[in-house]
Length: 322
Length: 92
Image (cartoon, rainbow over all chains, first blue to last red):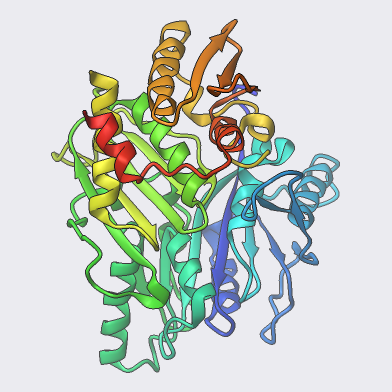
């Protein structure tokens, strides 16, 4: 597969009425966006007028003997494969990007799992970023909404034109605390620069530079979900791999997100990005995004503490060095 | 089988780097962690792991993603890396 250019996929999630369709509609109007295929589960009230719009019926597939969260989206895998076939046969325009819009209550994790694990899909497509819209007037809405924010790489605070400035500021603070690995932008009428959304945020280490501060999770967050940031020095890569697989096996339901940069002793860090059990292939970077070469890891979830995580990871690391 | 395991991913993300030497190091560290629970682990031909408990029961495990579920099956209880006793044991 060397040399194969994968088609980027952007996943747009967000609660009912939070502005997903408006955001996508405006994005599709940008002339520089290029040919984009759009896959939706439902046709919203504000319909997307687009010649490469595909609608699929959500169909989840639980892997045989798999754990509860190891669910794939069979409908999406089928549709992505069909789009490949049709593009090769020149039955559809030569699209260079796919945007997937979830339903408001959909769990985005099975989509990420599908993109990372389906053999055909993962060899032809590449998750570029997960974008979550958050209603700028009503804020987060239930555990689904909190999870959507936790797994996102970019957060769009919608309805900036009518949102109360005080409410908006509070929401921005809440989102930054809930997911410190994601950038937040406010938007009116879905107006967001495509470059900001489509810049490969999944593999972008810049979010993990400078802005992170140690947070021991003392601040309460919605639905018991909290974020924690750990800073460590060099970490043994083998120890980290064992530790993280064991942690995700034991607590994959409660660990919604892990994203970070690891100092494993090389010139640059290793970028780690997990959404529950879905682990992106670790990426060895050539250089650090800033002068701080400490390992830094963001954990978002419930039922654990920063101290517990750090003590455990340090113990695994010490065991590897003794 | 699940997303943690290589059955659907072909190659486990935590086992992609290194060769024989890296695998031996991984086996040694895994054996140390599992030793806390009374399990032993050995490499078999550089291809799979063999897990054994003290009663002689064993399991062949293909990769890191399956080790923990097989270890739990042999032990009959869940394993947690945040377990204080395990943390203290590894740090001792």
